[in-house]
Image 1 (tube, rainbow, N blue to C red):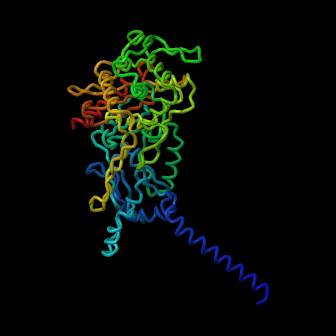
Image 2: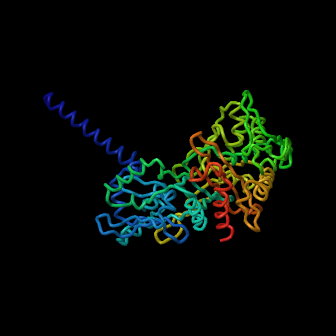
Image 3: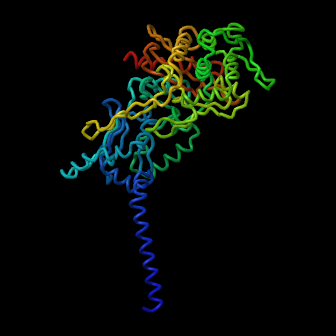
Amino acid sequence: MNKPIRVVSVFCLVLFLALMVNATYLMYVRADGLSDDPRNRRIITATFSRERGAILVGKEAIARSVPSNDKYKFQRTYSEPFKYAPITGYFSWYSQTGVERSQNSVLAGDDSRLFVTRLVDLLSNTDPKGGNVLLTINAAAQDAAWAGLENLPGDAQGAVVALEPTTGRVLAMASTPTFDPNGFASHDFTAVSDLGKLLNADEREPLINRAIGTTLPPGSTFKLVTAAAAIESGNYDADSMVPGGYRFQLPQSDTTIGNYDDGNCGGRRITLTQALQVSCNVTFLTLANELGNDAMAEQAEKFGFNDTSLEDLAGQAQSLYPRDMDAPQTAMSGIGQSSVTATPLQMAMVAAAIANDGDVMRPYVVDEVRAPNLSVLDRTDTQSISKAISSTTADELTKMLVATVADGTAAPAQIPGVDVAGKTGTAQSSGDRPPYAWFVSFAPADDPKVAVAVLVQSSDTSPDEIGGGALGGPIAKAIMEAVITP
């Protein structure tokens, strides 16, 4: 063989080997990643041509596929789009979000748990169908959460999360402003692309699930964490006398911080329960300063700060308690300001942990995975992820929170005949915008069935009328009533 032919032969052999290596890499190494990639249009087109499984709340399909009169055979539809969009997300030709994405393999029928179903379909020459996903959502609680946000004045921004304290089940999750996922499910791909660009450019950020994706200063609701750290130190209980008064001077600074109403909280020395009832800034600034950054950060992290815990719904942002804050910043963290930020989910987890004897349960939104015939293939197991506080501390905090609803700032959450535990929060933001309003609660206090966190990021409310109790209290009350008195 002459040299030119030998060179060409070797070159072709190298190309052939490279082709084999690349094919092997794509088919065996990257196969799962390419199949799960939401940009893979071949997978989406194939999925459009089969009946995608339903997303269920109770017996109602809030997302399902119906026959269509085009080449894709099936059209994805959402029956209550705005109310559930932050949870379901959307299914489109170029991407998926929410449960549509996290449970895509089940809904598309590709999950290994559906192997028997696929085999039966193959042997019977039946068109394959996707599996169904049952959510943990309580329909009445979700209705109350959505109605509460919708009734806020003006073009409001806010979110609500309700948890079952003993399990971590998400009973309600609502966010506003929101969007209609039916627009993304359209088979008009140009219209879908235009809608995506429009919503991504919207300054109100309707595609963000504020319940898990927005972090803001939690304000006075964070006083629960500060109170927990104080009681856990062994130096305080609900009846301990603590500093009150008009103002607190930040350490290493000439700056003084007063109370929300410029009052003295009832005196220079008050009980810790009274401090929580009137939301005394001076008390909790003092406690955080005394406890120090390490103790405060450790307590916050036990409740879930500086981490994420929601595994079956993407988009959870970390709630932050920085471990490198100086003394003035640490003092300010005691009232939920400084660099402390939280999602509504995180503050609901704080309330739920207190309600659950100090145990923090992993939150989840997918209750069951079901076959097309609705037989149960898998069920989510509950999981305790930390012991935030002792049961004794939880009992002390519960007594304080009940007093705060019965005769304190959280009175708007009162339910006749039911002991409710709750705390308001009003967090200062930048000087050119109004404060954020927060509310956390759980009920019944002696046998908790639901824990709630409400965030009102903005609304057409006069700045001097913004408060967690006034705006968030009625929403939390309605959700708790929906769960405990169905």
